[in-house]
Each structure stands twice: as C-alpha cells, then as structure tokens.
Image 1 (cartoon, one colour):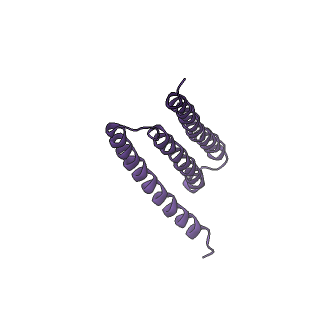
Image 2 (cartoon, helix red, strand yellow):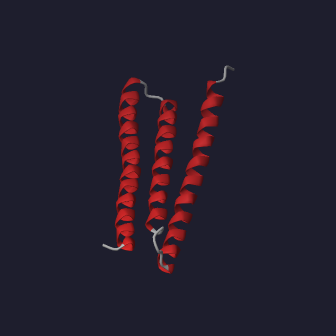
Image 3 (cartoon, one colour):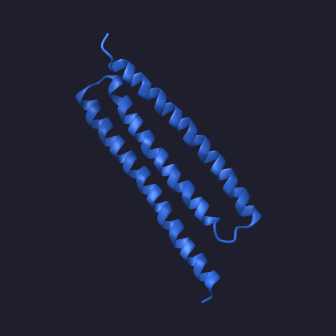
Length: 120
C-alpha cells in the first residue's frame, strides 16, 4: 500500500472518530436537556426554570457543531479538490453562522438569568 492511500485511509478514520464525537456530544446534550426538562417541569411549572436548561443545551449544540466542522476540515485535509474546498467553505459558513447566532442567544439568555437573579 502506498503512502498516499494509507494517509487517505487514516484521514477517513480520523474524520469518522471526530464526527462520532460531535454526534455524541449533541446526543448527550439532548438527552440531558430532555431529562432535566421533564424533572424540572414536574417539580416547578414556571418558564424561568427552563432557561438554564436551554443554555446548557445550547452549549452542547455549539460544541457538537465545532466537532462536526473539525471533521469537515479533516475530510478536505488530504489532497482536496476545488469542489471539496467549495463545499467546505459553504459548510463552514453555515456552521459558523449557526454557532454565532446560537452563542449570541446563549449570551442574551445568560444576561436575562443574571438580571433575574439580582435582588430588587
């Protein structure tokens, strides 16, 4: 087996591992948020109790998206074609925009939670 083929196969394994890691992060975050949603929903029935759950889920989603973007970068790391580079640029743009807006929403929610916790 030549070195280039070995490099491609190794890259494919790394991509799969990073993609699985990203999917696991998102899955764990979704399960955690769902369990917390049910538990907190049964204990207290106020909307304010769900904001911290949403913030945590948002963090899991952001981290999972970062792993997915890393997998896309790895996928194009070994002798990329112009088509692959274009696809990576489009995917990176979409995922970066998602992360930006998700991060902005998390910061806004954190400010609202902090303001709600201040004594009046």
